[in-house]
Length: 474
Image (cartoon, rainbow, N blue to C red; front, side, top):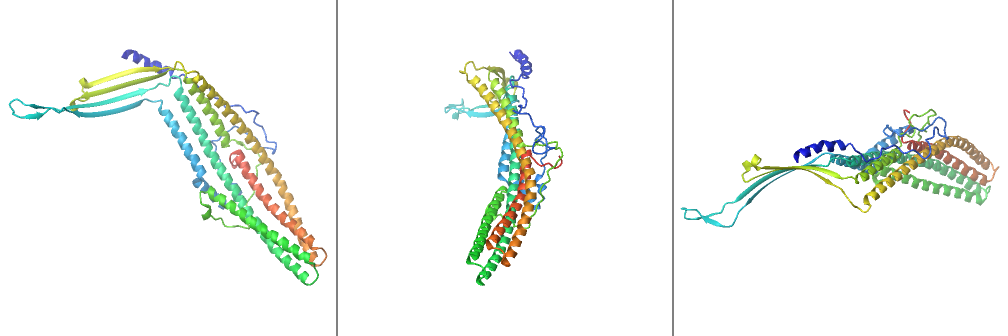
């Protein structure tokens, strides 16, 4: 028996090269990757390479406080912390699956003492003595190993490893998302600062206009309606100021959550003179556009995991083999333990095969294949969405740049019109309704210009997220 078993061992080792897992290839996209982007010349897509460094892309905005907040997001954001824990869990599962490739070894030892309740008289002693106790010591070692004959264990490892890689991409996606949310919220907060300053300046101007109108009314030069219109304009501006204050607080609270702080204890000082650079979108040809987008990488790795799961399901059709061995030593005297006469051993090979399962294994394979098809479709959809995001943001960057130039011209003209009509009103040349209209137009133009500048910065942030990271060094 031993000789036959020893002959079987190399045969089992030979067939462990078998695999039931289909050869994996990255699914082809429903449409070919675009050679260039229609929204901007010189930009093109490339193959996914999510291992590339995404860099501190937020520094493109040139704001020191934003840079400091972004570093806090890396450390204190709880969504990122949860994603990092999920990644560690996935890596631990890979180690657990890899352990199945190796034998398991168990060791046990015991000692017992037993005795009866009777007594006996020793000859010539004249008294009773307790009966003798029985002692027994034993130690045993056992080992078992399931050779991966059909590749089931390796397929399980492949599934776990691909899932762990997907989890790593999920972590990168969580980081990119949190950093993007921070940048957008910070830009919104600073836009609120600018608009609050603009509206506050307008409120002060409206207060001066109201005083002028009141004086003209008191002098009998202007009608009462001019005073009422001035009061209405002032009250509306003050109401807008309150709304902007609330909006700013909302952005500040959102930033507090992103950096892992309670909103009640978090403050960012207002900066009415805040300016930040608008990132310059490169005209050249980036060599890694869309390569670092983590959601695309995660979707592709989940396809690989689903492919490996097919191998696990198919392996269930084949028998499982288990090699086991054990050795035991038993003695009544501890010193005799492990002596040749006290030792016994066993070595065996077992096989198990399911003969009938009413189609359960077939259903499991079908389920695994359907899961693969779903993962592949999700990957294709994710890639298509990524292409759409890039096109949308490139279009936004291009349009907002032109829009900003037009709004800058409009704001200058509105400011000049406001001042001209106010002077004419003081001279009694125009009605106050003309002044009110000009003031409203000028304030609206200033706010639109401030909003457009921040929108350009926000569009740059969205483009960064669309391509999976910044373009510094590309």
